[in-house]
Amino acid sequence: MVVEDMPVNLVFQSYHLMVAMYGLIMVTSILVLVFTFRGGRIARMRWLQWLAVLSPLWPFIAIQTGWITAEVGRQPWVVYPSVSGPEGVSLLTADGISMSVSAPELWLTIGLFIVVYLVLLVGWARVVGRFIKEGPAAEDGDRSEGSPALAAAAVAGSSVSAEGSVAVAVEVTEAAVAEDGTAAKGGE
Amino acid sequence: MFEFLSVLWFFLIFVLIAGYFVLDGFDLGVGALSPFIAKNDEERAVLRRAIGPVWDGNEVWLLTAGGALFAAFPNAYATTFSGFYLAVMLVLFGLIVRAVSFEFRAGDPGWAKLWDGCFFVGSLLPALLLGVAVGNIFAGIPMDEAGNYAGVPLLGLITPFTLLTGLLGLAMFLAAGAAWAALKAPLPSALRGRAVRLRLPLQVIALALFAVVSVFALALVGTEMDPALAPARWLCAALVVAALGASIVFGRAQDGDLKVFLAQSGAMVALVALLACSMFPVLVNATPDSVGPAITLANAASSELSLFWMTVITAVGLPLVLTYHVIIYRTFRGRVKPEDLTHY
Image (cartoon, rainbow over all chains, first blue to last red; front, side, top):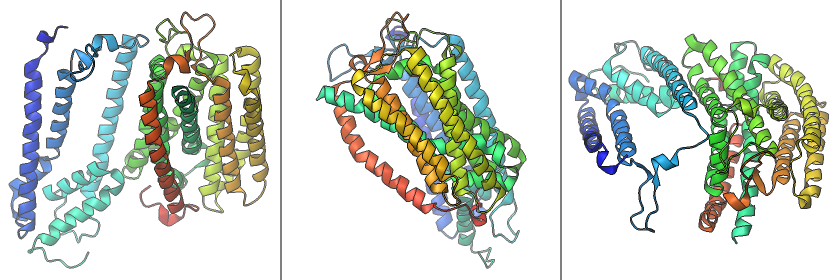
């Protein structure tokens, strides 16, 4: 492949999509922080709650588009020609292919990856769904189950680590509840 | 300096492999034994809790060994990881599903059977295949001029000798797992009883397989071994036998669980040391009918600069790693108690 044939537009668009996601992350974070800590008004702003629920998509898209930028952008090299070092030091992708791995093996492992990751996705969704359904540990049942704030907390918590997620989800939700002056239920 | 660093890193890679063998040995062993010693949900939870806090830090040693191989001996890394592609992928998938089965099992009782199965298979695959890989690099693989593996994918890696080394590795993993389960299970409990009952036969089988593999390796495989290291080899072989023997003897006492585990781990370290002394200075052997040469220190080492900085970083990093291991194992010392089972 010749350098001139490389898909510049794809690299350009994905890079700018990544930066746009960065902007969305900033905007979402600032909005959520401001309205949580100013009298807990977020509890009455359903549109912002829904934005928070959708917000894990922003870093996900940012990561994927960032990788597309990097991996498509560096073609046709594995290692871009050295700018500061010795002349001619580079590695074309075509020269970097392993000779001992055949195409059927690669197809097989790509297929296995897809299968394994699909199973993991369903498994993860089931676990997260359970956390969301159970809700915070010490609630009186006043909060409606599956409300967007709870969902956001559970999803945010589970993306940190499955082990700490129940604790994190409980803490985040309780913090949101505590800030809301109208839900003055006593207790944990 | 370059010669010294190459030799140093040859042995350091084996130190990392030995560390992995001991540390991940018992948690892969526990997983591979789980259907045989844990008969109900609570016992399975105890097993997961016995290795849950430590398995992650243990598995990291495999990554370090692989990474160090990549940095210090890139040709050897390329030949083995590409040549054994499907086997490496199977090990990888095994490790992935095992890891996930820990995290998801408690949170998803509906799929409990799947995750228990993943815990078992995900532990069994690496425990078996890693020994097969080691057998291959010792006995030799067909190589072309460029150092690429030229044999049949995956199936070409299974020969009588490599099957035996795979079984030896598996037996060591299982014995270590039984020793750890006996050490961590509540006392008294049916779980511990089963682990103790399996521990002795597994160690005896490991000892027998070690003898068979050694005879096979010396008599039939015909790999050239550095004559200067012959005393070291005999010493390591003696240590393997002595440590396994000691482990069996300690197992007869009522409170010998920790000593059994430590002696078993010592045997595993001695086994890797024996491998290192048998292979030096070759990293990947080639079969006699190979077109290309074996991968040795001379043709695989990376530059002096790389090796130097690797040494510096390891000198800083390895003590830190060992420190956190000590902290973790001390924090989670003692047998598993019912109140420990919250997350698992």
